[in-house]
Picture (tube, one colour):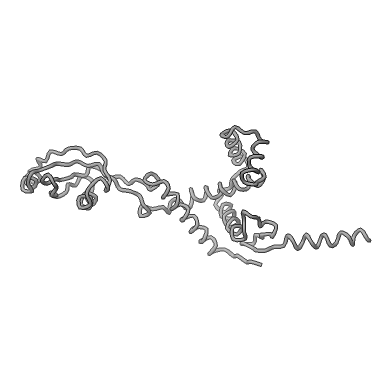
Length: 236
């Protein structure tokens, strides 16, 4: 009986420490899950993301995590023991904790690829470029006559962006459709006409990778907020 009495307080103490502090769509979050890298709000987002991954069938296998870890060790020429030591020294993580961190990062990658990336539209910063040709004339009348008689001799300009032209020229040229020719435009050398052969839309990812990554991160946070808005979240 004395033995049981001694054990009982320990059992109660464990219950108090590991109590449920939140419920997210029926999934509990325990007090013991809180750590320096994960406060309650971060854990709520983690649960929402994990549930969405499961719903969409985008789960990450242990094999994929094994491969990621193996590639990292090869990249840095580390043995498993050295890798664990490096983790502890640089991030204060155990291998188990790091594998969980990788899983969350791969969850995020999968959601971005399948649900978020498509939200980065042309208005977010893609750039229009054109293949163009140019002809120069001494006078406006000469230019108009050549256009009327279809005797314009063009010279190739290659592929250009708006920043390659003066603003007043860019406004005209980038409003043209493929195959269209501009009106005569006054330049320092006389008058020019520009013909657009082809139009390209260059994704923001290729125009400005840093800005594209920022747009992705913003879109991902917005996506998680949407998950929150439609979720049942109870904080204890």
